[in-house]
Length: 145
Length: 205
Image (cartoon, rainbow over all chains, first blue to last red; front, top):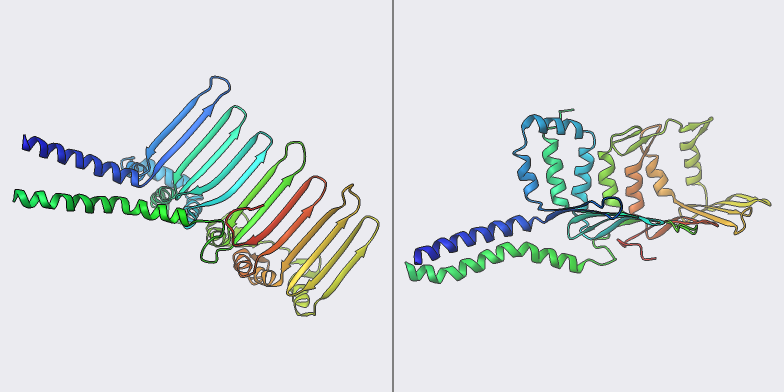
């Protein structure tokens, strides 16, 4: 009985630790809601810590291909993500044009993008540290200039 | 051994919880202390465009100058390289822009250009290290007003690069050292445009 309790405690503690570590990095969230036509709804929530980890399982040739394609603008993405981490709470861009609107801001170290037009709403939330990690990882596969 | 483990368990649990949640606590505190006035003397460039047409278009852009300074050198596109723009016409139609600027910089404050006509009033003034351009267009029903304020230090920094290029990063750096200032103000029938510099990370008006 005591042995079972110890196993359960160990298992529970492992799950709690793994969960806490995973979600401590933040959550990557993409929501797309269409109210026109067939009305597609896409909601993706995933722990941001998974993204850099998952990149290690992508085949090397695919990563080299992605690194080559992204080589031109990846230094810019890396610079923006790195610098934006210094501004965890900032309203960066807000555009309203009739019924359309776009809002880009940082909140709690996340980059938030909200776009809205009649019949469609898009919300993207991504930890800045994750963008930084991904851009750095991709840069290692970019061809040397 | 068993009793020792039993005594240690709460301590280990407490330490683990402290380790796990400490960064969240710090983050929460950081967020709570954020306000409209940014810390560490950060300088923000704000652009606001408000259109009074039927659609009511509004554009608000807030950019930390330090971010722009760090990010611009990462852009390598067309004429922009390493934070500098190659313009290739610094000697426009025989007018040497650098020499002209140097002449304006070293002369005393005063109103250099004044044009008054039925269509518009235009004036160019140098005052307190700033070049002020004022245009009052009388043709429109509501008489549009354009005011541009250019700190001379910023122009000097822009022209500090090699010939035929503007050093944008140096210009931004010089701009950051200016106090709160309204750089551009345009008011006409359809639009109100403002470009200004302050220490707030949000547009308050």
